[in-house]
Image (cartoon, one colour):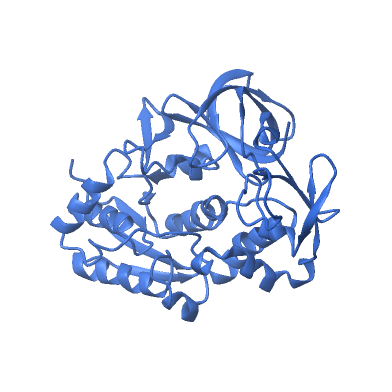
Length: 359
């Protein structure tokens, strides 16, 4: 379907193949395309990275795509906002003994709040991204669904998208596979057609998040004890930021039984370890719940508490002040404060919340 000439599409371009194909596709369909790339962290350092989004080379790649297709492209300096809303929150979360997900925070703040407002200021009719998630409009009722390519589905990272934001967003790749996207990039002759996908957290070189936290919060790197769930002190550690719930390797406490990190206690600076069965949790308690369903009543759902997990049947119960409880039919493992629990009903995304406790 050819777009009306008056329709302006603002495209969030990370410099990767996905958002580049979105821009080329909408241009081909007749939209008045404007590409926007956000510079999110130090430009000099970012140039050295080859597999991260919103870095120096990626900005150049996005501009090259715009020049190749023939639409305007702008770069916005969001470094200060990104530092305050994402990186600082990331560091503080680890200090609190949590396991943060900065990609969700970035979508929730910088991209789907601040950038969306920029799109409106540019008289855009919608903001399009390269996320693999589907937006379905059924007689005026707009809902979010998993991407058709389940190996690339990114709905977990978009659970905090509000209904108002969803009405203004478009996800042109939600119904196709990554292989199809690559094929389209070649057909359009895009210079990023063979570019590798982004890996790890964009602002953490080589995935060594502990080094970043030490740099940003050096006063919080305090030694403590590694304690068995039965109370025995098994060893010492150099800071709880180096551990996550469910971790098995790198405990450095010698041989014996296989042990996992069960929980982190920032008050006593303790890393509590135990057997795998000690990780089992039946219920998770959430705050900051975002709801995309019809009515807030107790209901049956499917949910997952990590991106890489499969969904599991559960019961969702709403509480006051944006809180909720999810009780799984079967015990779940490796649930960590700071992670997200996302709700589904079939392919539809019903929302989610942030885990602050489990039992």
